[in-house]
Length: 100
Image (cartoon, rainbow, N blue to C red; front, top):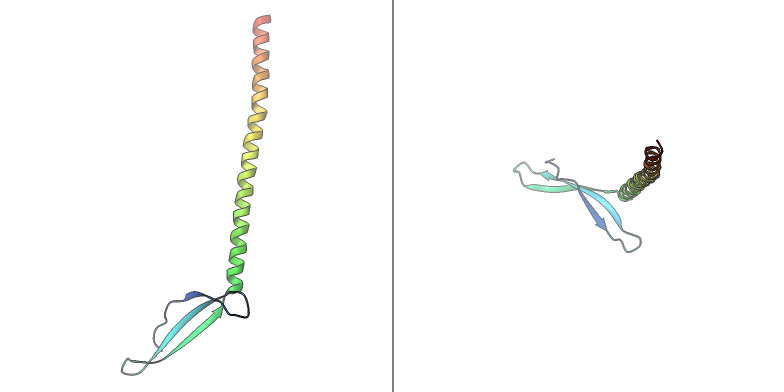
């Protein structure tokens, strides 16, 4: 047996079902003189792995978006809480400075 070719992913479109994704690999069988005597190859159905990768990617994006929304909400809430308190403190300081 010779060396392996690189693994490659392919999309197949069989007529009787949805798209299938496969990984292929080919190995040349060499004769004594170095010429190619034959090729042995494999196809592995990786459709379910690609589907799981896509689901995982979508969930990660949704989680990151939820985290961004949560951070924005916390930032906005803290800003809103600080501002009225600041105004009340300034008002109290003004009142105290005028009174006393």
